[in-house]
Length: 267
Image (cartoon, rainbow, N blue to C red; front, side, top):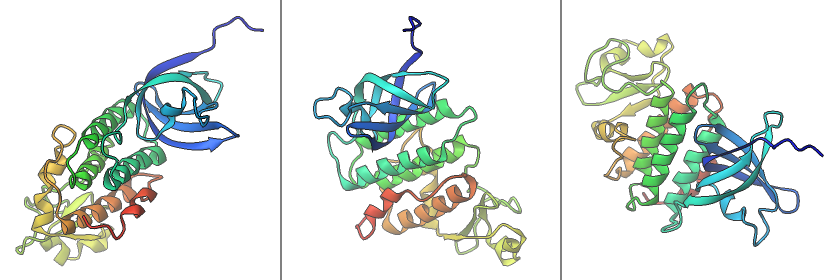
């Protein structure tokens, strides 16, 4: 038997996803501050009185202890303490869905290359504000999270000037603007009329003044999170726009499955 100490680590982490394995265990995908994304095996966590059971619920922030053996892809979760459960006070459908959707994006995209620290900070800020948000703000907070994620990765949409001609207030005389994920942001009416979209910058969304009015507040996150709910039409437009941007710029991105739970729900 080896007397050498087993490699170990600790830190604050968010559970992004969990799935059962074996008869009583759970594997969790965790974003750990200063470490990055880990896969941890929580042995016996599905047993009723397991001390690991509270640590494997998606969305919870916990102070975790785990193995950190570089020779293993799957580490062991050894223990920890829950620091924040964002659904403890008011587990509404909207809060639950937008929490899980953000976790899905982080897990499936797995952005790295030095972004792990900023990603954890963003996730922590989003979960904290979502956990105490007034009803109706959930969609605005989620879209602000998506914009902040795009900014972290260097592909935040440009909505101040036309990405083709550089004209400020990139909108036509009627106040309508067009979005092009391939161009990286808005295209003004004159450029659309001139057929710019034929040059590989396909316009995929028409944004009204009401949509653009929400941009400054959404784009201020995580420094200042949105305080006003989005109107239903604006929420729908922003959802489509950001989905197209994420789909175009983030390899591995797909529409979070949890958002399907909101279909048919009033906003």
